[in-house]
Image (cartoon, rainbow, N blue to C red; front, side):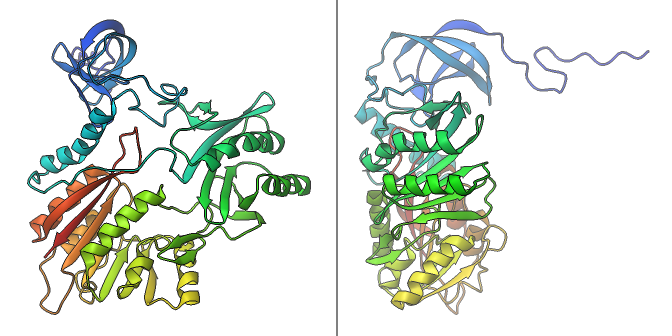
Length: 445
């Protein structure tokens, strides 16, 4: 019988690197990486240790492989680094929402801005001016997705634990608007009465100008008595709107609409569909809009790509005609309703820009383009914008809004190679104490 070939040392049967032996080691943390974990070296390999800062000497346990290095858990800080502070949240370390509360404010702000600087440099774009970090304060986040789990007769409501699907039952959150935090006790009572034992799901809560808009996503067969209890919950919690949807993005059943769950964009009221995307903070949204409007200047015709429910479209329409393109029907329907009511100079189009971007010939009518894609970026659309300028017209200004510095830098590389000139990039921190960062870049051609 032919013997199977011997596997190289350190490899599994499928050729992947074997997990490292679990062991406890002392490490000197050299820096904080892009995910917010401290980085050290052990026998020439990088080691990632969460909740550490540069200068820490720590005792850590090697647990697994991560990318080209090792993942470890923190056991003890033997000697604290100069940037370490006591985290202000009692849930910190267990809750998966924040990862950098142990970093002092100056070190944190420098690290956050450097996330963008580093990604630009990796794409050979290190000469683009990066402006000072715009900070959004804690207790200003107007939208949150709470995780919940029904167990032993009660409902845990909060956020998923770090690197797990377990639910951390939170009493308060330093990031959220107070009205969102105040909703939590009533949510626990309602979910304990409505959802079956063993059920888990999400609750999307948004603070609108009409009050709280709540969407529950869970598997539950609602009967008449359940709906009566939900309506009573909406009344007791003074909700603007309450909607229930089974997981998977199916039909959203309206339970109660006591007031319009509207948000205002440049003085125009829009009622987004339940659970629709909004910029997480009002302050962050206004900072982005200010930069967008300054960049487009007096452009008379504009395209707003990935327009959502109009957070940029409507302010732009105060300057000139706008064509808004969005891939989902719900947000576009909300925008359409506002356009018809207020007579705005806006046309709309539902279109999946990842699969069918606006071609270079379709961009000819627009003097300026604004793009706010999801985290995956907008490579197909960037490739069309990067095509040679058309003598018949086309955009001379492009504003890119991104929540992912890596995909932003990748797409910028395409645009720069196509003749676009970045003027500057503004980092906007709408996600304090996390590795997420918003950015706005202005380009001219």
